[in-house]
Length: 220
Ligand SMILES: *[C@@H]1O[C@H](CO)[C@@H](O)[C@H](O)[C@H]1NC(C)=O
Ligand SMILES: *[C@@H]1O[C@H](CO)[C@@H](O)[C@H](O)[C@H]1NC(C)=O
Image 1 (tube, rainbow, N blue to C red):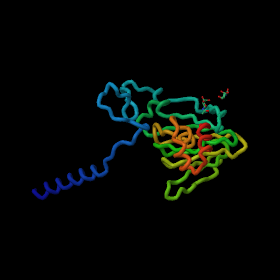
Image 2 (cartoon, rainbow, N blue to C red):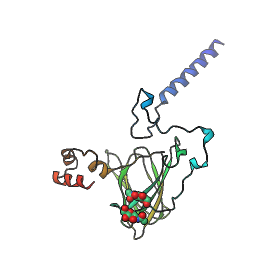
Image 3 (cartoon, rainbow, N blue to C red):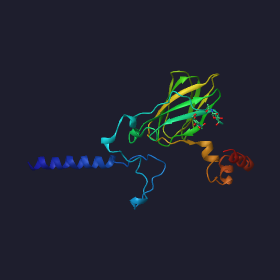
Image 4 (cartoon, helix red, strand yellow):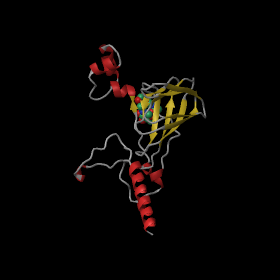
């Protein structure tokens, strides 16, 4: 009897220890979430507040219009139409979202990273040269040319891009493993931050002439 009890206690302690060892905080669902003591000054939790389940309806899980191309008349000649938790409120806490990307010939989705999501992309129309770069131990480029029906994965956090190398428009659909993947377009973040990063930092970091840095900062 005594032996049985101590066995149970041991099992319980082991279970507790292993649950403590694997416990972790939830992943962030937006860029920042500064703790606050006074609730009246708070605007959101990590993610969004939940609606009373009694009030949920089909519209909370629905969005339309992804058949329509985005307007690609911009510097990079592409357009990303995002379907995230801001568009479908029912995505809150579900860890998934979707985008449609349109590219003109030679249009590109420039090098960028999603701080909170892995992306899996499929080409509906056209030909894309895509790739991602591994982190600093190697900085290896993993790239491929994709045609209609092909699927490619961009691992979470890694810098990646797509470039339409075909002679026609291209269209892709991608799913991302966050309700709010976030996007950091490298050139915009580095050269177009507000306020600007001190040009001396970028001159050394990018091994450029300071005038080139100032020119780039004027462009973003
Ligand atoms: C993408 O397309 C939408 C819809 O046509 C447009 O409102 C938006 O300004 C476009 N975004 C860019 C960056 O061109
Ligand atoms: C696309 O965007 C450009 C630049 O903002 C604008 O001039 C043009 O009218 C837009 N095209 C459509 C179809 O909305």
